[in-house]
Image (cartoon, rainbow, N blue to C red; front, top):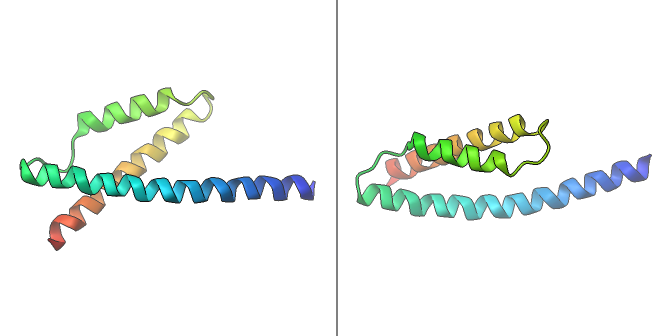
Amino acid sequence: MQDSLQQARETINEIDAQMAELFEKRMSAVRQVLAYKRKHQLPILDASREQIVIEKGCALIQDPELKPYYEELLIKQMELSRRYQQVLLETK
């Protein structure tokens, strides 16, 4: 049992490292989106775009039991993105 627990934790650690790298890439793209929004005087929140992201993202999840959790993850991720954009707007 200890081996399977350790193996599962190692897998989680590897995934977390990949997610950290992807998070940095995503937030870099968020900066680019903000630059466009700033140039074109668009609001940070685009609710229709966020709904599309949620629908497309949830469609990628095969396990129906996990869909609501993934939806929550996407919602939180977009909240963080908006907050980051707001901070960038205030500091520049």
